Image 1: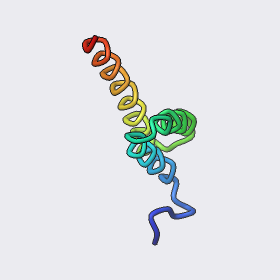
Image 2 (image 1 turned 45 degrees about the horizontal axis):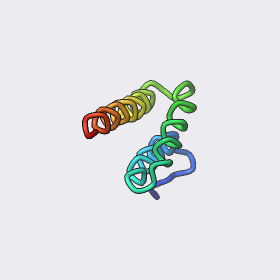
Image 3 (image 1 turned 120 degrees about the horizontal axis):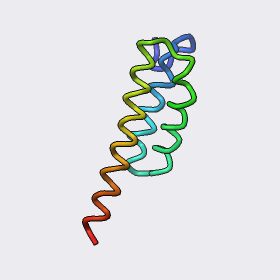
Image 4 (image 1 turned 45 degrees about the vertical axis):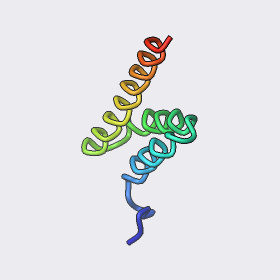
Length: 74
């Protein structure tokens, strides 16, 4: 069994987590990750929907804290 199984429906959630980790270096990947999470959230089962909600919430909280940090630095 590999990390990405063809029949595993949680692959996109893993991919979003990978996008977020790589987004530390390449910021555009976090945007791609949140778009993927938003698009797959509707058709996901309940247990996977909670992962997508966490990923989306993490994106918005991080963005809010980054904006607050930039505003207080100037």
